[in-house]
Length: 143
Image 1 (cartoon, rainbow, N blue to C red):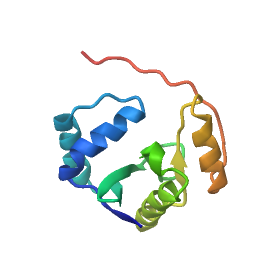
Image 2: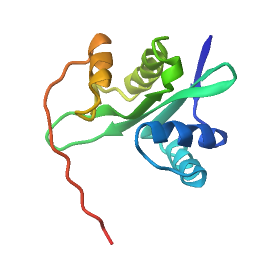
Image 3: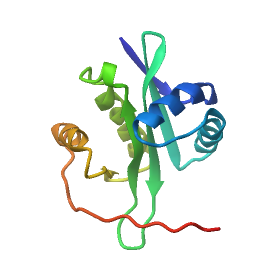
C-alpha cells in the first residue's frame, strides 16, 4: 500500500537520492533548504509517496502567472523509484497536485518533459495529458 503525504524537510535524504535519478545532483542540505522554501510558499506544493516504510516518489507543483495566458499550475518535477513503477504511484502523486491546483482556481495543469524521456511521455499521455508544443530551453548564469 502507498501513502501520499505532504513533503517534509525530514524527507531530504530520500528526495535527494531520487532526484539523482532525474539527473540532478543535489546534496541533502540543498534539498532540505529547497523543501523548506517550498513548504513556506503559498504558490508551491510538494508530496511524497511512501511504500514499505520508505519514500519511493515525489512531486512538486507550482502556481504560474504569465502575461500572455491565464494562470496555471505546472509540475516542476516528478519521480518514482524504478522498482515501484507500474503501481499507479505517479498517477496518485499527480492527483494530489491536481487537487491542490483546483484550490488555486486554475483551469490547467501542465508539465514539461525532456525530449529524451520517451517513457515519461507515454506515462503522461496515458493519464490524459496532451502534447501541445516542443521547445528549446536556454539558460544563463547570473554571476
